[in-house]
Image (cartoon, rainbow, N blue to C red; front, side, top):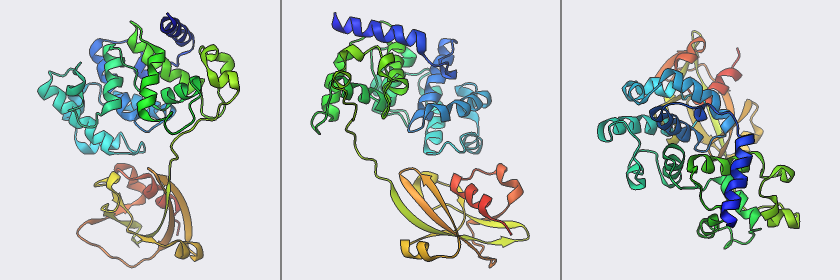
Amino acid sequence: MQNSNISNKILKWYDNNKRNLPWRKKTSIKNREYFTLVSEFMLQQTQVKTVIPYFENFIKNFPNLKSLAKSSDQKVLKHWEGLGYYSRARNLKKTAIKLLNEFKGELPKDIDKLKTLPGIGEYTSRSILAIAHNEPYIPMDGNVERIIKRVFLLKTNDEVSKENLNKKKSFFGFSKRSSDYAQAIMEIGALICKPLLPSCSHCPLAKNCKAFRKKDFLIKSKSKFNKIKYFEANVYRYKNKYLLIKNKKFNFLKNLVIFPMKEINHKKFKYSVHKKINVKMSNMNMKIIINKNNKIKKTRDSLFLDKSNINKYILPSFTKKIFNSVSY
């Protein structure tokens, strides 16, 4: 009975407070599957507010699996530009092709079959089954973890282990409205049970929450370690064009073009008189010296790019930031 009461409270809150997100709008079953697939790929390691405009633009240009599968990699990546983690875009296109060739254009309802699709693992497979197929899964994202940690006031390493969190997830029970229920729980984590300032007065779970009773909202989480790395970007200019090379340095930016760069130590960065910029990439804080040098070093993997034409190319955010920092 308790679980039934919990699910009713959560769904009542959701019906009155859910965000109007573009992938949630009422549409055909086929479109819902496609919208779920695209949004879940985009939401991997990216916040909802960042994803919304990208999703809308992506769906406008690739309205279904067939249009996505038939598009060039270049076009798909261009409409992903700025969202980062470009392997997601490549995997999404590969998944579209595989769905058309092996699954008649439909998302499998079997978790093992879903996990054979490029870019789909434990979390994304469960999200798709819950949201697109109304299957009784509650995907364990950071929002759901945070709710469980606070409801049960979990503090020790053993208590916040994946294994224990999955056991405690039974607190939520299930609902016939599995699609809404999975989204509702994540929505409470995103809008109410926030990391620093939870809005307990608006939370449907406040009476069930040990953290609320104890007024102890500090949560234990794995510390995210962002490496600090130092680079020197060499900017070569010839007749208003700039020399770029094919990236071989950063695995997550495969085949994109960047300025010639080399890693340096922090002392060289600290004492350099050249312009410096800071960029956050993946789990790395990049500190970059911009070294302007008119000497041309063209190689087989390089090209000259006019600054006025950069929108025609797919460029990492730090390459664009270097462009914007360059002035003669």
